[in-house]
Length: 278
Image (cartoon, rainbow, N blue to C red; front, side, top):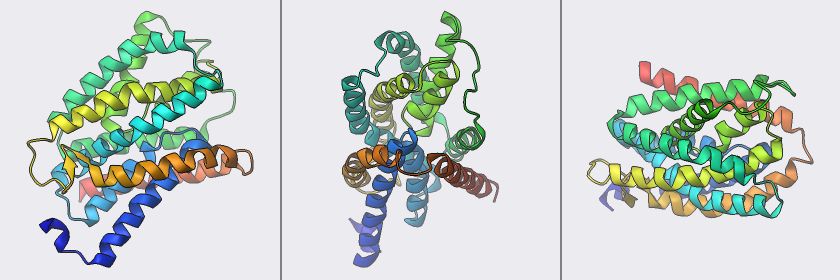
């Protein structure tokens, strides 16, 4: 509690409002654009933790770990919704799942040894790639006529699992555009991404809890690298607004909003890179 005593009540209320707003925006964008909320939550938490004066060595780890924890309930609800709509291809999920789990394990182990700066660089690099894809992807673009063979699918799944774990995002942000570019129908790709979010977030969040148990300079109310205060404020807001985003998708120009969000991601990545270099 001593940590928070240095801040005024008004400032702490502002922090709580910012965390709630993060959840609201993450939920809307998840439903509207089909991206995982983690791609919003991680950079916002990173900047909030910077304002709080959290040590740079644990700042990104805390943002990633907290984000992974928030994805657990949201991915469960999303998967259930996609199952009701019949957009889960269990054969595809079973084909990808072993390699995704392997990637999560590798990413979890790597996160324990990566410095805060290195983890920030990983997120910024991947976020920049996601931003470029969102901004310039052409409708109908295809990498191939279908999924690759066994070895290629294993490489694909492990890459999605590993990078998603290190970024603190669900599987959808990476898997949906990749699977869609491999001729998997969009609704099936989105449903698969939601299910992969469950596969990634459970062990990923647990790993960040265990990896951070003996680490000093963490925020109060943290379990390992997972900040419970952030989790408690973000999750309800995200769950409440995901449905709104899905409805808005039919009422506004989602392509233009996708470009705006891509610009936000690119600027976030640039700011992170600048911070690493200065």
